[in-house]
Image (cartoon, rainbow, N blue to C red; front, side):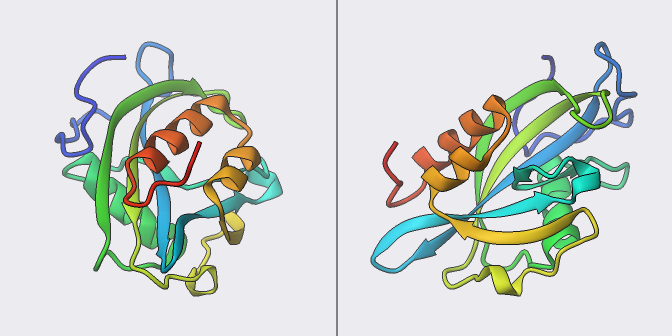
Amino acid sequence: MSGATSIHAPCPAHLGSGTRDDPWHVVEVWLAVPETGSAPRALMLRRTPKGGGFWQGVSGRVEPGDATYLDAAFRELAEETGLPRAGVEVIDLDRTMDFVGPVSQRWFRKWGVGFVLPSGTDAGRVVLSDEHDEAVLMTFAEAAAALRFEGQVTELQRFAAQLPDAPPG
């Protein structure tokens, strides 16, 4: 891994070519919804079978028009869920991770971020893109158990530990 890990870092002009030495730049956004009287819940999206059929947060490639990785994360939130930026609290996970895509077999460098959505956000408000076929609110334990990739579990747990009224474990 190289370069800045903060989502506030400016995006470079070159966003990778998908090789081990030059991975594509992507963001992965974990979503939490505060609930009155209980721990926050995770809003999870399931990729279509063609896209791998696995659960995740919002994710996507950084594009040339994205000034920062945070800008890319908010753009992906809008594209994949239709949810607005207004009222979202940002938690910078200050972490990058290199991995091979399970479908493309290309290399990616991922910047992780957590978004705390406004209280009362419901999965029924999500307008799914063609990349996903379901959106569900889960406990963080359920979300971690649903994830296929260990790096995602670690990242989700890192986010959960930074939440107000953090869920146990």
